[in-house]
Length: 218
Image (cartoon, rainbow, N blue to C red; front, side):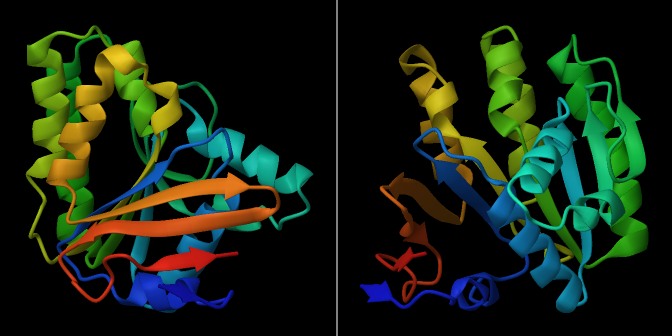
């Protein structure tokens, strides 16, 4: 099924609070346009938008947006919880600087996130750079379990809607199981790819059955 351009807002509005939505980029393309759209939509719908900024991904997307001629002010104003990194971007609510131990990282994130969730709900939580957690951490089952548990515990929590941007191509084939697990946890999975000058959003899975198989080309 295909729909005309300009209906991305319709896709976002079809999502429900409590969902974890995985936006899986399968090519080498960037995500700054989708992120700016999503932040704008969340602000308009009355959400408190909080970006989970993993290893300075928000800064990189902001810089690329500016170079592409997109207004980057929205990135400076958005609330952010930083995981690792060194560059201040956005309105920082918390900064977890030590990422050497994923189990401790997951616990510190939950403490910070719960505080924000309890005071700022409803939240639109947008994670950028998720793939970096799996590329940079030691690939031990205990470490992966800690990260996965931190993600999955919020499925069904209607105080928030969570969107996770993942560049799947960065994760090599030996760690493909991580992508499979993230797809399994997610309530909606949207694969994004670009061919020539057309970007395609394809919904491969959703709790909203009317969305499954939906294709948006922009």
